[in-house]
Image (cartoon, rainbow, N blue to C red; front, side, top):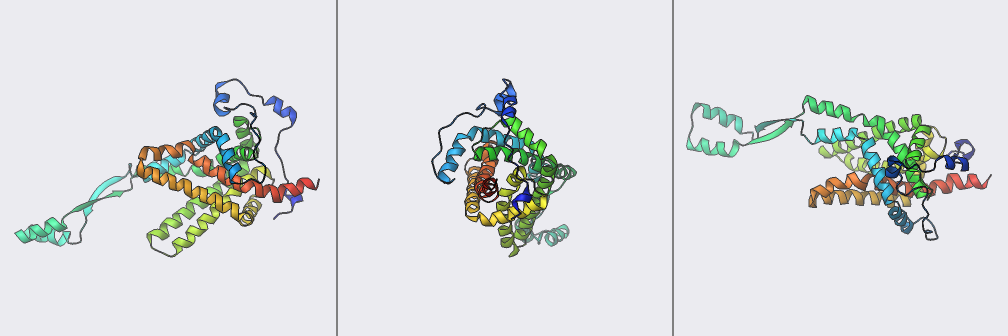
Length: 325
């Protein structure tokens, strides 16, 4: 772990005079993005460590905020919609091809003469199957989807700040906190997000490639992807909380993914349950499977990740620093 005196801990809580300048404004955007007002009082949480019970109590109390965070994630990372449309095949050219290798010789033989036998064989082996060819429109859509490399980190920076506030039970000034976090971490958030999104795309591509080829590397890549998902729980909280370089953020996130392994596993199980629920919804009732990601799926995954990561960050990198002052 990096030395605390070199990590530049920055608790970004506003001073009292800053809070007075950030009082709720009575306009439509404020009512949309801050539905609970300026730090609404809530009943005390149960005593004890941040366990599962507190996790779901906080989740329930901030469900409305999670809806808005999910909406921001979808709108902010809109280039992903281009990829979804491209992979749906709607922009591809559709053609047909013989489904049997016997089609060509049978067709050649029937050009000279036909018989009941050849006709019967042609009925068996003359079937056609359709396949799709990538069109120029599909390539354009895939190219546009790469714009997510430029939006991914910026949106995650702002939403990570909001989710950290929810986990720490801080008063949330939704829109101003979101914009302020992006403004303070714009350059680093962009670089971190670019690397993060690129790694995710590469790992998913490798996973799909080895799966299609039936290689044992598929299982290794599955473990690597699962481990990186746990590393990601710490990337953005570390960036918005400490003054660290990109290299040190990844290094510390890697260490924390091991130190907080038990909490990380629980958060990863929550991720698998959410993905499993989405898969079931798509199979049982397709409209619900479409609606679920648009409502709360992405923000829920991010919430459980930061809830797992923050107590360990606080324990190791913040509490000793504060106590030593």
